[in-house]
Length: 456
Image 1 (cartoon, rainbow, N blue to C red):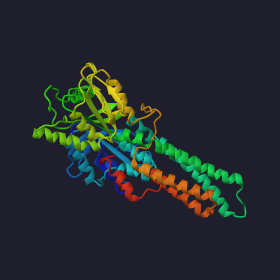
Image 2 (spheres, one colour):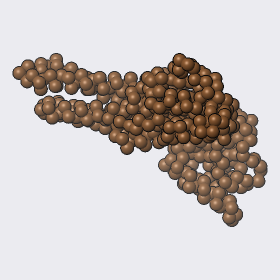
Image 3 (cartoon, one colour):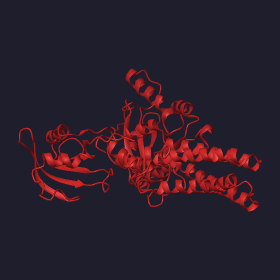
Image 4 (cartoon, rainbow, N blue to C red):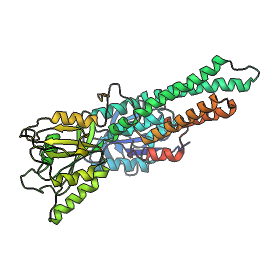
């Protein structure tokens, strides 16, 4: 199934720190520890117990570092193999020296994600749980971490198992008939097959309906702030970030480049981009900034079109309207603390609008709520009850399973031979197996685990 080599890697971030950890996994892990650890007890190392001592280079007998060492014997370890962890001082050089000593003593350097891959291949976790590990590492908000934690705990796997249950039940009925054709399936039996498949279909549809929300929670969204000069774009950025990130002056064209920052809005990771004010100008540098802004419009998940509500709608505003038509737009009517003059053109009448004052913070909470609701509808992101698909791989596999079940029902209701229509059920099971890892091709597994860092 996989190489039985003993592998090793640094499991803590590189750089200075209080502690660095070198992890070893495989049949030779304990043997390596015995060769380089100074204080092996006469009765041998006990599993899951920390030992204090020194790491010794067997070639020179030099002390490499003062360490704590722990052995976790198979199968009670992360990989279900024998695992040794060496906890040394956290300097960059010293951790590298410890790793090199381990490699010279019989281990090879682990590939990215190889420890977690071994945990998967040895049956400790399924593929959904393995993928959740990288999401825990990369999560940007509490809600994203909660979603990953639910997946790591197997909650999403249980929902997939519930989908498979109805399909397996139906196959059992069909195979019983095929094995004993003299025993006809009665009408209640036929109805039970159809009901089980329809139940599985409904469960798949529930998961697919939650995909977009799970995806934006995991990956975040890109929100582009556009508008003519001096409407308060940079002030809005600073207010949302709660810090002075962009320069704010009364001079038009202050922002030339794109300013990009991440902000957490109710658990949703939002990548905010402040852009140059769009207007007719002969300034070459300012023109370059406006070109960058225009290029980002098609790439953004949401456009915040900032307008000055204290002034009439101008030609510069109309230039922006032409550029953002057809995009997901939220109009931000700034300077609500001043007398209101502006009237929106007909093209924007159906777009949602929030009035704010970036100067004094009025309406900002309403704006945060409006941004959130553009992506998450009717779902709390406090993390306690939110379980969803979050990766395209999962969605595509479930779509294939969904299509196979629909095809089965069409053929089943039409009275086609059961030995033929049952193939659709097997295809659906195979697609679902790709999600949890039972039937995932090796090249897909390689793509998944190479996303991990070395040492995990």
